[in-house]
Amino acid sequence: MRDDTAGGGTIGPRGDIGPNRTSARKIDPEASAPVPPRDRRLRMPAEWERHDATWIAWPHHEPDWPGKLGPIPWVYGEIVRVLHAHERVEILCHDETVREGAKVVLEAHGCRADHPGGGFRLHVVPNDRVWVRDSGPTFVHDGAGRVELVNWQFNAWAKYENYARDERVGEAIERITRLPRHAPMRPDGSGRVVLE
Image (cartoon, rainbow, N blue to C red; front, side):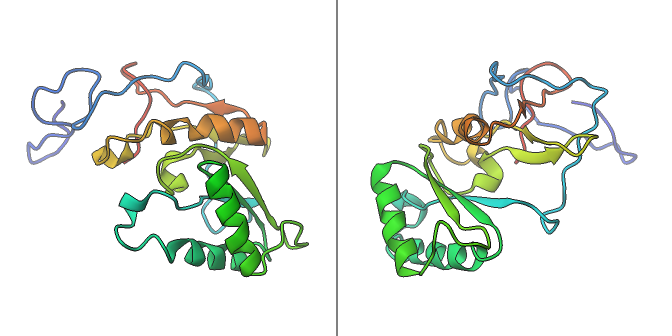
């Protein structure tokens, strides 16, 4: 912990949590994703900039929607209906059952995989919750404008114990897109950078 404030306050975790821990749990580096050289500049586009696709995960985990899961897929169907007319929607489905359920809902909403505006694609990728913006990689541009993936450490907001499948979503998106994936490491070498 270091003192970085003029008023004498501290920045960083408090208490004895060890060198490889956040305030919630251990951070383990991921060996499968290389770290880009420090002199490479990567740019993260703003959410409103033009992009090829929106990535979502289809809702399936009832405890995330206590007593309300029934209508939630229909809300997602409406989201896809609006988006797929303008851009491709990449949908991660926890398993085949979730994939088949998503197909039924999307058909009922008039969504077409081959819509000329973008359409949608369903991918069977085991996941724990729907927040791909947090668990999935960030799509960035290198200096030449090529798209790459930055795969942050995900810890389920230090709130949930079941996030092992979400932690692997970046690997699946790398396979689907065939884009290079990088894992930003903490400057002290104690693991991947966590965004909470």
